[in-house]
Length: 147
Image (spheres, rainbow, N blue to C red):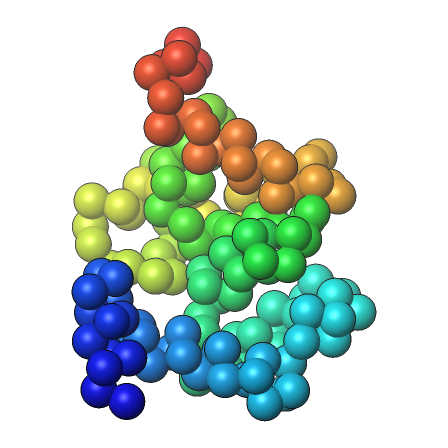
């Protein structure tokens, strides 16, 4: 109800974001989804199942797979920090990226999905761990040595 919506706003969620998260929770409560069901699916099918829910896009599904389902081989190629870290470490695609989640020109020099997948192929089956390291690259001063 309205009280729950206001609690969502207090937690920093927009009305639409709250609605989508609630929809995911309701799918679990109604038995449409469960961790066991999702755990039994291959990564691609798990991703497709989550993206089939209203308001759950690829980025949200990747985060859910990594942090809620503890999937070991997820590469969130749409994550801005991950893309920036790939550029910093590997010098990918300057000025050639096709943007999937944003049309902001300042991000046009970030690597393309295909490039990221090619590089991260060596990380299989632990691309989730590789992604955590990529977040670390941009979030710590200690990682600045890679420039």
